[in-house]
Amino acid sequence: MTAPKKKNLPWWGVVLLSPVIVAVVPLAIFALVLYVVVSAFLYVAIWLLWCSRGKDVLFVYSDSPVWHAYLEAQVLPKIADRAIILNWSERKKWSKMSLAYSVFTHFGGYQQFNPLGIVFSPWRRAQVFRFWQAFRDFKHGHDEALKKMQSDFLHALAEKA
Image 1 (cartoon, one colour):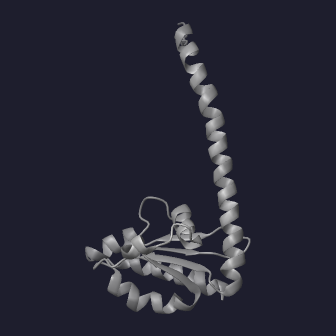
Image 2 (cartoon, rainbow, N blue to C red):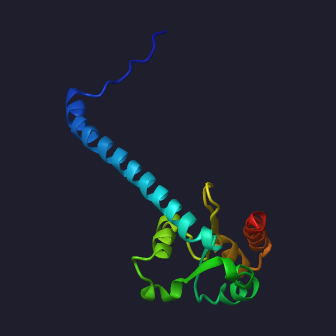
Image 3 (spheres, rainbow, N blue to C red):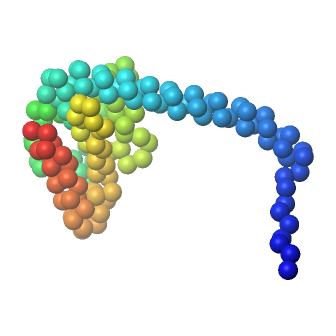
């Protein structure tokens, strides 16, 4: 029995793919380096400007009827003195040049970013807590995930105290 023949890429496929690879690899490397530089800059700014003044949390939420009342009663009073708080429903008023906005867009991402808690500690990576899924479950009568998320979030804050 003979081994199956391996199909090689035709010569024209190699010719067509080479310029794409030559163009994409440096762009990918540049994007990665830029991401690392921006991350480092944001961490240093957060540690110097926020953590040194007792602000070690960025919390983002909105006026959604699903979570607004809950967060205002159960979470915000516990973090108000140490948090930078952004209301997504008022985002038109946010300054695009603020550190809070930059931190939110960098660490929050584009999915499940509301409600969101980010805990910062000097010389450590940020801990990101995405509450969206837990509140979706809560809306459908399942509060276990929300209780766990809230507990984990508040525990992360208590560890730093």
